[in-house]
Image (cartoon, rainbow, N blue to C red; front, side, top):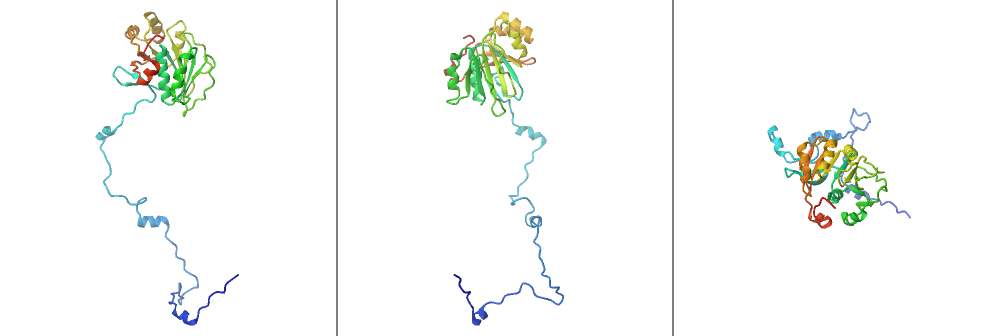
Length: 279
């Protein structure tokens, strides 16, 4: 249903205000309607806002001299697992999550291996333990993640592929005795392998020679000769190895050597007990 348009009387039309026409013809008019082009955004920005965005407060720039730059520098250390403090009481950091394969050999007891595993899990790494004594690792694996599955215990020779990545690094600890078998899972990018040897036996030189990093707890004088021939450790360090405390280890590469003392936290002491060299 449509409604008729309302009509307006002449009286009402006379009451309307007069409107100015949009265009008034002139003697030189060609009949074309002039077009007024609006200003471009660049022109408007150049006229109204000479900068980008809103005008901020007018303050002096922050400028320092070349001599003052050192005062605002921030020291950045290594990224990894804090395994203790060195002789200068500085944190000793072990970087296990690397974009290249990384093999570590630890000549020591179960305590230092479990501390390393617990601290690696605290950094966000997935920890796998290949061991012939699962009863010694089960309690730690259950308590490590606080209810989350971050540490898994495997029988010897049955470690599946872990699938390491930059967002999910893996640390595999092989606690397989004095003569570990050749592992099915080797070191890969973002997957470090830590082999634990209880002492320096006849098969130790092969493991020590292929490792990028070696940690040595207290050993006997007879074992130091094997270490000297394999790693080339100077005599002053060899003389100290039989006298190390239970919580001290010598971490060394082909070029660098550092003594590190591992102080357990209260939580680690509750789970693992006091530091000890022998199990």
